[in-house]
Image (tube, rainbow, N blue to C red):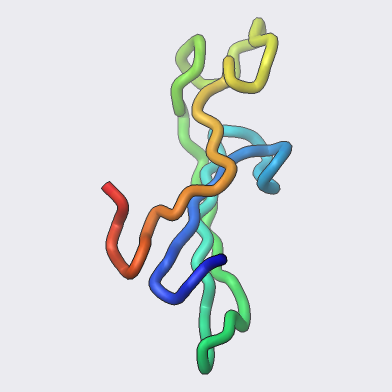
Length: 84
C-alpha cells in the first residue's frame, strides 16, 4: 500500500508500465481527506542507466537486464524523507 508522504520510482517496461529502461518515472499520489484522489507523474529520459555498454540500449543485448537497471517499484520517498 502507499501512504501520504511516499513517492514511487519505476522504469520496468514489462512489469510496471514503463516504455524502456532509460525512461525513469516518479509517481506521487495526491491525497484528499486521507484517500488518494489522483497521481502526479514525471518521466525523465536518461542517457545511461548501466548495462553491458554505454547508452543502455546495446544492439547485441539478449535480455532486458543487459540494457541496465530495472526498477519495478521502489519507494523513493517514505514518510516525506528521501531513501538514501
